[in-house]
Length: 422
Image (cartoon, rainbow, N blue to C red; front, side, top):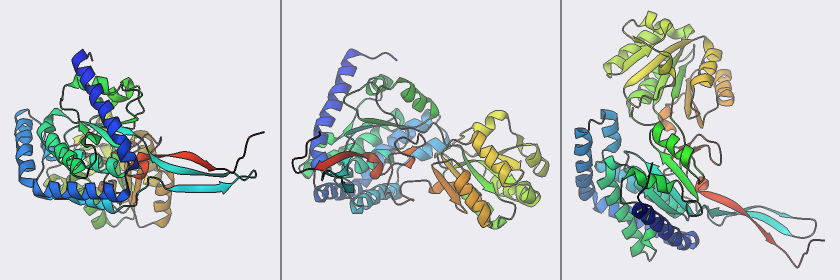
């Protein structure tokens, strides 16, 4: 991807300006940061009609461009979703401030008192598609954790993102802080991304949120540290002795509630011990919810209207009302399937057996593992973080939803009384 020199210069200027603004954020008091977040929440509520109007233009353009129903859902803002953004700001304000906290203080034999202090990362970049609420959540989390943020949203949400970013800049300015601490790159030209991923020495961390193609491009081209998940191929496994009414409820929620998000279920695994009863039952429920089913041979034998699943289906992140179904031989079969096809994102088991629940928790490698609950709970807000910068499946330096703690690092500190090294 080639870049225009003028564009490259402007993106770097914006990034350097944001990094400079972040110095004051890094040392701002908790009270001041909380006041800024409270003001942002009020501005979001007061600006609801204007935000909906800006978003309406994005949605209409998205429909004209042929975006899927699931993508339109991700893009859409309404009163309740804007209120949720405001509530997230307030919840983040109430959360403990990690910046400056000290732990692991120990006295060395030479009398030196040594510990570690949590400090902001610096300038955090986030590249994202479709979901304008990410603008608010990223800004709020970065502000509370003492970081500046450089935002680059997708063209499909350009008007919505700009309107939300302006509100945060206004909140910062009204609280006496530099509005550049929340900077939205004002162009959706993809060439701007090529500049952003090369901002070594300016950008301290880059988080891409979007389709697999975007994340691979960032990971393969960045010269700055990157946190990412390539995709969310999430499973629900229904154990042989599961409460089938509960299993149906969980499976429907995991697939249907918001199919276009990364923590939606993409594959349903059913123990052969209960498949004869459960597969036809869940197939009827999913079909009624307009879900297209693709099954293996054993699943199709029990629900013949299913399409035949291909090898590609087991690794697919549909982000739509499409579901793969496989019948497996007990928990060992389910664990083997997840180990082969999982994406380290979210995995759930429905079971009455304590030993199977414990095996699932211990043996499944994923950023969030659930027992008798929907995959949709792997979310920063639902897990008590207030909001999230994204869900990391890279394990370094974070695994799972990234909240305030994950937007900090730790530096060593030491108190001495004249000690010198011999």
